Image 1 (cartoon, rainbow, N blue to C red):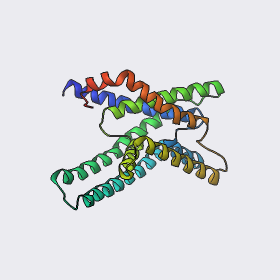
Image 2: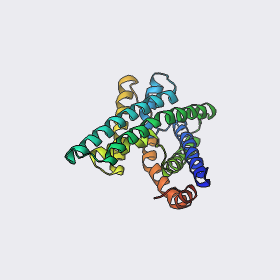
Image 3: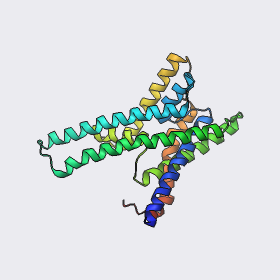
Image 4: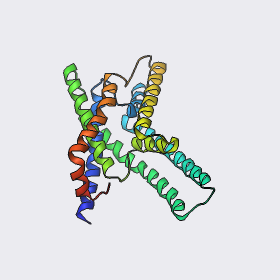
Length: 236
């Protein structure tokens, strides 16, 4: 195995572990979780379900939606090309759908580590420590997301569905991400108020996560991305 390939997998696996740790720290703060996991968090809290298992269920739904969106997008492309299906188009759809399906075993392993970290890390009681834990969670979430995405292997379903929606509606990923986050927050608020009669998973931590994670990703990439992708042999 090439040295660059080894670095690529180390950065990818390390990024996913850091991301899982960041997500759990976010939930342990008790100040509100990031939008992408708020639905799973509220459902697991209201019905006393395992958070990791609930997240895996949500990720499975994301992957199913990705499969449908990518199929529809490919079909629309063929229609726009007057049914002229060249060799590259024939190969692209099975490859894309295969990458979508690979997100399922990735999600299973990822959520097992979430359960592991959740059992290890206690929830802080003091308000000051909660903000410290929230800050650490946001920083680790941003670093983990940047590391795993920069390696361009198999995306986390939370990122994969945003990209699939953006491709389908032909809008920028940033705009799509904001809309998707807002949709998740609305679902979480609705589920919380209907079944628990109070807000669960949405709070100041949610707002800070929306604003902070993207900034952490941008700062981390500015400082480390060039060296990382060079070591990993990833072309940009």
